[in-house]
Length: 586
Image 1 (cartoon, helix red, strand yellow):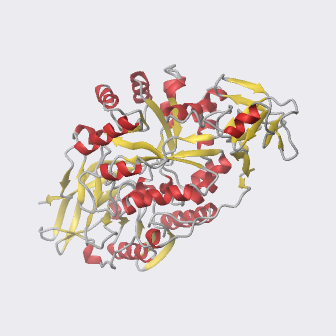
Image 2 (cartoon, one colour):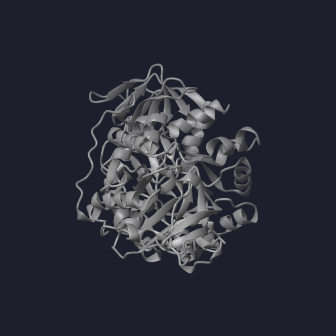
Image 3 (spheres, rainbow, N blue to C red):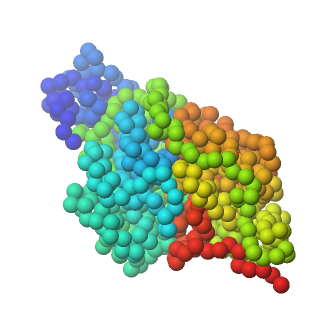
């Protein structure tokens, strides 16, 4: 990466802006620990070694005695909006943990505002001491059949954004889109190839010839592995793999066995978080937490650090800028006292300290918000009769299809018998069968659907949220429609929120007014609200660790499970709508 100031410093023509002395550099290029000083000019590493000639009157000296210098950590696939925090708040949460780079399509806000939403995020990123790289969503809407959303991204929008300096390609190309031979998607892939941009994959459950087809379609990587076998299969076929660890996807441990047990090279293995809440990010950690887990699994610390830095940079074609401590690279680094324990003491971006001992050392303020970001809700108050499941069956009993949910992601088919009263099929908390509704919230079209869900364990009350994957409509699950109406109407009144309600009472809430899916609140405030929401949900009967995770992924149709959109219950594979009421019981 060309930088004339760093060039002149390397040749001794210009004093360094910063010199880090007495540290032990984790050299991800050579795989060794190198005792050497490092010079920085204009935010870029300029040279190794310091004989005193590079220091000028204004040079800042960082004494790294007793510390390892580690490259800034990279999250290679993340939906920052899933944290419910704006990009500014997200940076406050992860910079103290050593994450200096995120790679995000911003597809959540794209569902709300289309390309304007992506641009809002990138403009906000430009204000931050935080590296953000953006592949465009491969298409919005991401659902099959298409749900009702507020924005669209297709070939026209992608072609426009490919001219932006932040453009990296397209993200999360689902295998289901490929086998449907969607013409616009293939033209987008061809355009990426013409411009030498990247195409990132999404192949849950795929293996063998299907992975071969992903590679032949131009896909470079995948993050949807859940087993050692899937990980081995992808590495052998030449895909980069991004091992995922998040609250609803604890996939790191089983997938890491491709390295620790199967003995494969970690050369093409990087790390990602995909989706995580604020509490997990702040308390458990981010990419640093993954590094700790990898080291505890017996992997050499330098190798683990390579997986969190250089490997991801190379996979994303960014290794000329990030991923290692070396001349010409951006001067993002961490100070870590003990590599085996891997707790980040300080984070530096561009040679400037931004966090230390778990706290930010520089102030970060969100940008002013205008109506584009704050006026994304158009949803009239609902009444109870708009959410019930009706049937032409007489009073008695009906057999219904239930989404049986585990860990927020798995939604298997279950059939149960439920009571029918006055033509309405009722939920039955005693069987752990609740109502679940998805309500369109962008143009007040009245589009909504209700089906049945189990696994959450609510005995009473309801939970609602407007921050959900793939369409950003309002999803509500409840034991009774009165509580559901209270929760949904409160979400709408707040212009986006997570809400727990019982009857007509709101028990806990977190407002998400930025595009209806994010807040500018500090991470500590978000964590406090998450704790109140979880406590309120537990009082209603659930024992799920992160209850709202059960709602966040309900609308994803491109995973091999049942899903629900505002248009109805979708059966994976056929992508046909399914009537949740199968018939009466004699």
